[in-house]
Length: 435
Image (cartoon, rainbow, N blue to C red; front, side):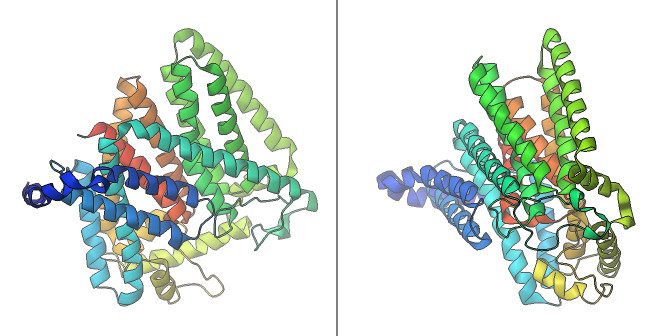
């Protein structure tokens, strides 16, 4: 590859500098530090602050690539789809009628893609750190879950209208928790917890594999607390995503068990399902929240989304080839020309429709191709083998499934707290399955 040939030439020039530099030889430590800072700052920092850590990590990765001997780039089939996606995003930027606003969105996209390449490049030489990265995500999930429980018991008040109160009795009003994720929003909080919930399983599966049952029990408690916190958010999109995540976890876990334990696990799953159904039925706030999913136009939030979908489909029809350009600010300006009166929106409330509107149909197809290549390859590996690598892949696949399913009814996916987790999970698959 011409690019790797040029890199080798540049690395040869800087080799004397690299050999004498303590910082350059320990640069992976600095990259790893920024990855941990991204994980923990996501729980309390503003979006810009989180982005700065990512940008710094990207800069360090570029320096490493240019100076460390024998470093090279590799592209999987999925990465080729990602490159096509980026090219169409770039073309969409060039053709945007609101170039400056679209440029801001483009730089965000560039940061996310740069972080993905950085994360993959870091894990390639530091696979032993993968379990610690997942543990950090799991710790974040446990910490936020405890905060969610506290907010629920304190009955925190709503910051904005998060429920349709017109059809609810007072006893059906739910206290919706929002954690410490900024901006405060239970839907963002629910989406964030859905994305990192599978990471808590690293503290369950790995200890069980080594017969450390007490440690596994602690991990299972963290998993249960995070599930409870997701329920307390009242985020219906997160409920749907959680439902599918639990099904996937159950299927993959069942497959890994020995025949005797499969029977016990089946009985345990049936009991837990019955208990959950019982609480959904007897708790009025939870029952009202779950049943409102199926109310369609009967719920104002559902009706609002349907109106936004209709307007966004019209936007797509008029800009189906290259889209309107990246970014939520750019979206808002153009959306104003299509929206129904009284139904202003920050996004399309569907990540697939949002992608198509912003950068066109071919961009969406390329992004879906990227996802298919990675997820299908991971699932094939999981179904064939049962080792430590498959455990990591299960966590990544379940996390991606949760984010992508939630993305059908919301666009919190594009917030940095969730985006960075998404690229980490894809990066895990890339690192474990491609050389």
